[in-house]
Image (cartoon, rainbow, N blue to C red):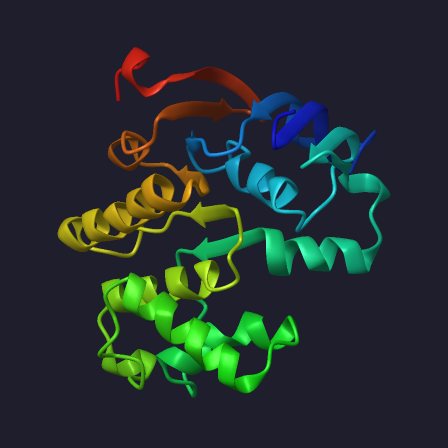
Length: 233
């Protein structure tokens, strides 16, 4: 069984009205455990909407979405919250760090929601920061770190829960090319060493080229889905 199974997924706004918008327009998608997939598309293509549905941040208007064998539309709010806290780690372009918290405290946040005790929480957060090369920055605040360092804190926060899936939304969009490559290298390391399933959402062909499989979306539809080596980027 695939980790992700989508069948005829639609996300429709203002359905039936003159200003109807089909952000997702009949998506069929299967993703296996341990894949490294790039979902690429221009602004307005539907890629962010697709990520929101994949990440259980939003539900489709119609269609079926099974995540790890579970039908998303049948889950309770508590079950969906559990998935977002435990099964999926989110990495956002804007980092979403709390300015008043240091790196260690930022990484501890999702562990607090999981009810993990203070001692184990600090140990797990420190290990995650060391994994992304920030072991000496645990007590630095976001304002004391570069953009690349802040993004790596965000990655550490995402992996601290041990989530088997990482969804990265434009993770290099605000970074220079060298720092962006370092962030992608970190994702590759997680994929290679832990078998983490990586979903990389981007508008950038060069970033998409880092994945093993490329899915191109346009007008809410998948127009390309193939191994990286079969597509020119």
